[in-house]
Length: 169
Image 1 (tube, helix red, strand yellow):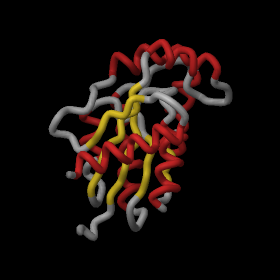
Image 2 (cartoon, helix red, strand yellow):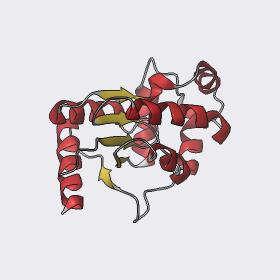
Image 3 (cartoon, helix red, strand yellow):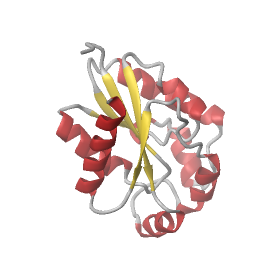
Image 4 (cartoon, one colour):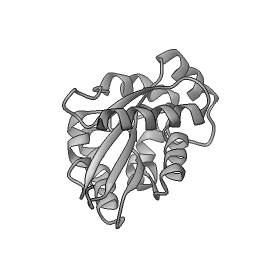
């Protein structure tokens, strides 16, 4: 068994349930949770509030901040981060320890419904199309699992744990 930390990055476009799933996984695994949205520079938050999609240049400092938070956590973590492109995941993978991805997969129609009903978040539903266009699903050589989002949050967390365990076998 490795003594290196393991970081689970719960990823996906806005509205997939990253924060809810990550919180459940963190509780079950006894790990601290890092909310990636909390590490966005103020300029990124303002851009998204204004309905402007972030560029790779916008995302770079944010992704490095998440990576650094994982490395400095002093152990294993559960993290939320959209991680839409492989190049973004490559930055996160440079954190100390093993970095695994839990990609929450939700049909676009359901995402639209969820975002239309969501209040109090800086990410407007109008940016969903740009996120879906940017999303690069996990490749076969990436350490992670795709988790279909169906059923209550506990069932999604259970399925994530089952798929992660199966991927390690």
